[in-house]
Image (cartoon, rainbow, N blue to C red; front, side, top):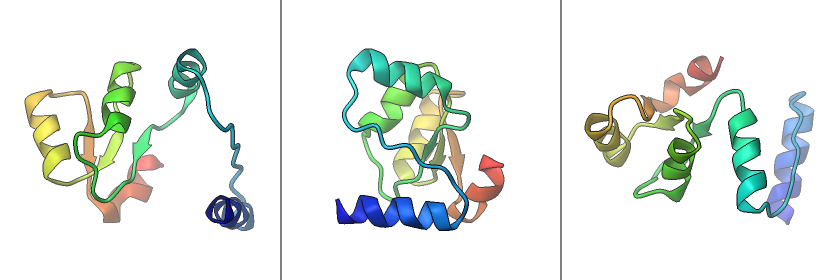
Length: 94
């Protein structure tokens, strides 16, 4: 809870709106995921990630921080994920 509060405060200080929904059922989660402007997976160490496969399953092509797993996924399934170097994430989101 403290980490979430700190995140929301930091976002507000930067002028970024944050909506915290809490738990969502599968239908509500898919609806929200499809409405996101830019899907992002910013975990530094994602591997066999449910986040990654969920975005893909919802018909989205997420930006994902480049690592061995993300690069392998991109090579095996072209067009399903967009690998991004961490230093370029901000520009890619824009």
